[in-house]
Image (cartoon, rainbow, N blue to C red; front, side, top):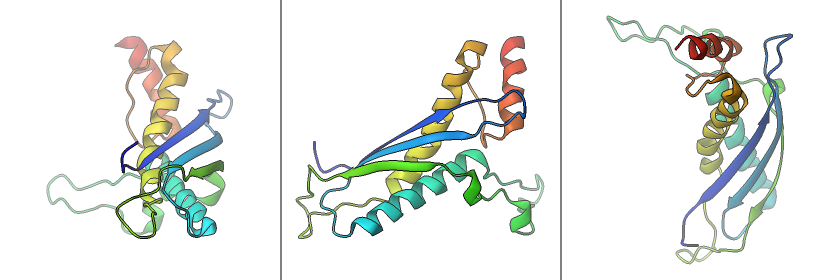
Length: 157
């Protein structure tokens, strides 16, 4: 493996018909981050990136005025921010088998890769769960209404 940063994020999704919600199951991560200098900071960076990525996939969106381009959210209450109880338990370990050869610490970055991989993993997991219903495309954020509206659209299209 070259001096690249890789992060695989896997999520187990379950759709609930009763309450029209899809709680997240378990999360696993593997990160090629080179040499770990402080494992507590590495895990915090990875968990923070995963939380940010999950928030981006499930809640975050921005509405703009069509004419002026002005953002319509006036406060944090108008913007879908991820809450701690919306998150999952993360498990995983950094992979130190490929130390970086371009710096004296042999370390690589660790937080940004999880925030990039998490939204894609969530969208893929939801699409996999909806595949038997012929849903092959879905918008974000993955709110319950977005997921449930994709089902009749796929059946009619």
